[in-house]
Image 1 (spheres, rainbow, N blue to C red):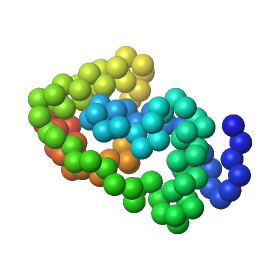
Image 2 (image 1 turned 45 degrees about the vertical axis):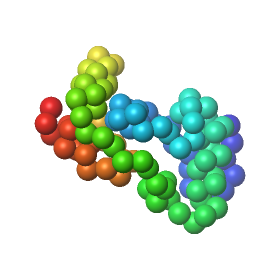
Image 3 (image 1 turned 90 degrees about the vertical axis):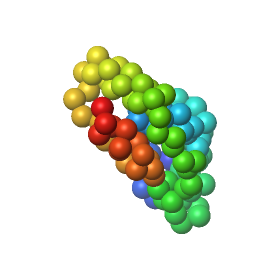
Image 4 (image 1 turned 180 degrees about the vertical axis):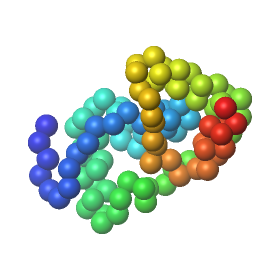
Amino acid sequence: MTWEGPGFVDAHAHLLRAATGVPAPFGDPGDREAVAAWHHRVSERWSTPMDEEDPPVVVDDRLRGSLERVLDRARAAGLVEITEAGLHDWGVLEALLAL
């Protein structure tokens, strides 16, 4: 994959976003072409991915269970820190703090 334009294309997991059930705005995160195309569309609007709207997150037992499972999987993979800069909903932080 090549990128023509300002900035760069990175690849990251969005583990916490996936755990919340909030779909990725570009579809399958494994589809690098779709991810690059989405970032390109956002940059053409002179905005950032953080400017894009997300549906609200429902903080309930399902969310807490999903977060526990994704954190267990991350730990099993050897990850020692997770940062999710792409969520817009404080409910996810509240659920993490409750865990």
